[in-house]
Each structure stands twice: as C-alpha cells, then as structure tokens.
Amino acid sequence: MKRTRSILLIGILATITQTAPANANTEQLNIAPNPSFEDDLTGIKTNVCVFGGWFPIGVVTEDGKSEIRITDNVSRTGKKSLRVTPNSNTLRGTIYYSQYNGGEEVRTNITRAGVSGARTIAFRLDRDILSCDATVWIKKADRQGITLKATWYTRRNRIPFIKLAENTVDEPVENTDGWFKYSLHAIRCYTARQVQIAIETNDSEPFYIDDAEIYFNRYPHVNVLVDQFGYETQSHAKGVILQSSASLWRPPVSFSLIDLETSQNVATKKWEEIGYCREWDLYHWQGDFSDYSIPGRYVVETKVDDTDYQSPHFEIHEDLLVPETAEPAYRFFYYQRCDTAVSFFHAACHLDDAKMPDGSHRDLSGG
Image (cartoon, rainbow, N blue to C red; front, side):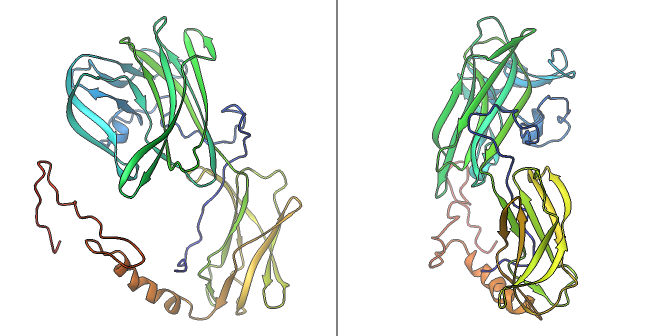
C-alpha cells in the first residue's frame, strides 16, 4: 500500500566512530530520562514519572526500605540526585517490569530481592543505530560494587524481551570529590530491537546517581523525503524534507525538481533550515514547491558536499486522493481483523486477551 498524504520525519543522528567517547559530539541528543534529576515528576501519576523517569530493579516497599527516590540531600551538579536504597530481605511490595512493545507494568510481589538498582525503559532501536554509549556518576560507600550495563533485547511473535546480550562495566574511569564516573560503550547485536540501561549493586548500602548520559550512535546518511503518495495539482502543500545525521558543514542552498520523462530540471527552489528537532534527534531542512502544478512524475534532487541525493519518485496529478487511498483504507479494516487468520498477513491473534489473572476466561465477543 502506498503511504497516504503525510511527509515523514524520519532520520539520522550525528556520526560517531565506534570508539568515540559518549560526549565526543556535543550535538548528540542525551536520551537519559531526567539526566540530572532536577525535574520533579512525582506529581505526574504515570509509571514513567513516579521515580523521576527511571524504574527500580526489584521490589519497592511503601516504607522506603527498598526504593529509588529523587533526593535533594546529595548532588553532584544542581540540587538533586537519584538515591537507590537496596534491600536484600524478604519483602512484599510492587515490582515494575517491561511488557510487550516496551510498555511498563506493575504487580504486587513477595520476593527475596528488594531494590538493587535503577534502569531506563527499553529504548526502541531504529535500523541505523550501531551502538550505545552510557555514562553515569555514582556516589557510593567505600568498596561498594557498582555495575553499569546495557542489555540488548529482541522479540519473536508475541514473546517480548528475549535477551540477546549484555555489556557491563564495574570499574570507574574517574573519581572526583567522592563521585565515581562509570562509562560504557556497547555495540548493538544485529537482531536487537531494544536496549535498556541499568545501574546495579550487590551491596546493601544506598548509593546516588547523577548526571546520566545515554547516546545512540548511528550510521551516517542523508535522506530526501517526499510524500510518496503524490501531490494533487491544486494542492497548496507540496513540500520536501531534507534530513541528516549531523548539522551539515556545508548545507545545501537549493534543490531541483526533475521531470522523469525528460530528465530535465523544471524548477529550482530554496531550502529553509528547520534546525535540530529534539523529538526525532535529527537535523532538518524544508522546501516548498506548491506553485508548481504541471502533471507528471518527478524526483527532488539536491547536492550535499559533492554527493547528489534524490528523493523517491512521486506524481503530480489531479484527483489523486480518492483513487489512491479509498481501497487501501477499507481493506485496512480487513487486514486488522483479530481472532482469525488473514491470509498472507497474520495468523489468528489476540486469542488470550480475555484471560483473567486466575486463568479463567470471559466471553467478550461483540465488544
């Protein structure tokens, strides 16, 4: 099915060699949640925010004897840090765990393993991600063992979080004013779909986490994005996006609209810099050719440094919307049917959604 009318903003991060330190490129996005723990997120009642954007490893108790918590008693920079209070006793409390598609779930649990550390969510991985760098500063007791780890996961069918590999470091690379810096470089497993960063201890003493940094390192490339569905002749929204893994040293000034029938340049337009988009962790430029309405098949071409880049081909024609989208739109509902197999698309699925915690089933047909 062709994509409907939307220009996709998908892209690439700054280029880093596999041996570069985490902060080698200051333009990279630090994806560590609440990295210096200065934001008070406890008032937002979601699983992600209860602990300042991080999650406990092990069971959390209501009395504070086994928990992670933002505190203003100790800090390396700013005023706050994340305190981890380990407990190896037999405890009853709440355990937080990753669920299908990277979501977070909770349940009551009795265990001999109280909180032993803190972790991020399992970050989904774009195809172009090659590796991950993580750095944290830890204030801890003398001789207390700390492990910084990156765990790579995949999933098969509906089985989530199949562990592929784990990269760990347990020796600090720097020590300043009682704070120990741990730094990890982890290369992605080929089939990994998610990665999770964790800081753990085997000791019972509390420790503090501050100034966390997590970076994804990506394969360098530039993309030219257009609406592959096409553009109607009278549309006033004919646009193109240039995206890059880095802020280009010599950004292009213009782009050309090439007629595929004649291979001729039929229009030259200017790029407008959008800049760095934090939500996508990419650099973007946008162009507009809304004043061009001659029907035909085209590509957009631009030059970055000495390399020519072209968009996928697209059409400009009258009345594209209904003929190109009506049938895929109604067929979508057929493809998405559950509880039965759809030939060449998927097997019967969601067969256990009405299963109750005690193992019994409810008849929810017709819902």
